[in-house]
Amino acid sequence: MKRYAYITGMALFMSFILALPVLAEEQEKQADLNLTEDAKASILLERDTGDVLYEKNAHEKLPPASMTKVMTLLLIMEAIAEDKLSLDEQITISERASSMGGSQVFLAEGEQMSVDDLIKAIAIASGNDASVALAERIAGSEEAFVQLMNDKVKELTLENTNFVNSSGLPAENHYTTAYDMAMIAKELLKYEKVINYTSIYEDYLRKGEENEFWLVNTNKLVRFYPYVDGLKTGYTSEAKFCLTATAKKDDMRVVSVVMGADSAKNRNAMTMNLIDYAFNHYESEKLYDPGEKVASLRHIQSEKWNYDIKTSEQISLLHKKGEKEAGEVETAVKIKEDIQLPIHKGEQVGTMTVKKGDNLRIESPLIVEENVEIASYFTLFKRSLQNIAKYNQ
Image (cartoon, rainbow, N blue to C red; front, side):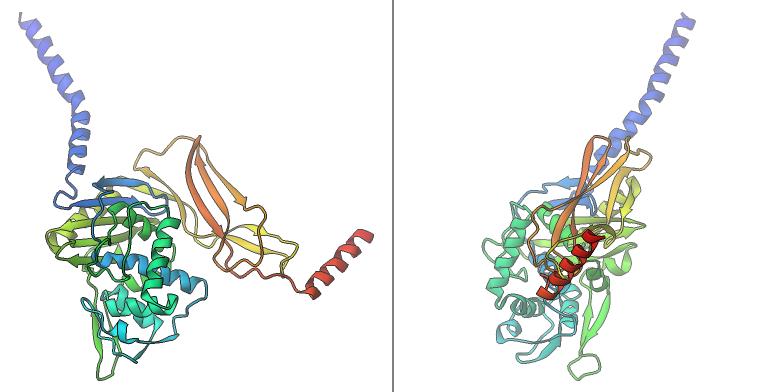
């Protein structure tokens, strides 16, 4: 009888030991569910792949407050990349821009300020007046700029976002979701120079002048939490406390969105939970740097014979720590057929696909980093002579 009890006891003990990993895994899953317990909605994704690592009510439509400026910054950085706007250009502030309420840097009607300083005002101090000033410069009016914002929403195939203004001031029918905001931030972060602004904790406008203005970042995590270098906070009485954040450790960059927190402290704590979770559980494998040449474009009617085709963003694969996905990595470059000239700087001319085994993991745009102009008659004539000479050899 004692022998039977001993065997039974040992069996129960071994069952308990074997069950510990399962219990630990289950507890970890339960802990994951509470990463953003006090938020209305949240999401965590890895920037390069877009893989969602955590989400809660991620497709619920909510007011974004000043996180709206993530889209505003995206259109600004696009305009700079396409040489439609330069950092040293001086913008004359309109009466409308100067009259914006809410967060502002107190721009005066008729005042001139550089694009560089206006971006600082948006990225650091969430200046509504600066947002309108640059919106008017890019599109002619804030209304026209808002149309560009919503056109970009469609281009990114986002289904639950509609913007009414460029600043995030409360407005009817102005909404987004945690998922959509994360995808807009993912697109913005293709333009890595935006981090030069969003990572600044404090700076000045009109330095040394009588009306000098001290800029302090509304995103305190930039200063007080490792790896965080952006992006944009938001608060209104309706939206509550919101934050779209980004952090980079080694080659891995993540984006988190927290919406509807009841305090800035809780918003920041939940953001830290998400970022810690990402870096503790996942790691990335960089395949290509942004701006890396992967192919050449040749067009019989272009001014130059060869143009470099480059990656538009960093391309990486993501996996859980200690769990590398099986299969070889295969990359392929596909150039668009029937390309029409001219092609503008930054325009997509192809796609890179990345497969891991049989799984398609990434499709990333490939671009040219210079204008591809139609060849002059002289260039075409010279090229024809060269071809005749080669043929006769």
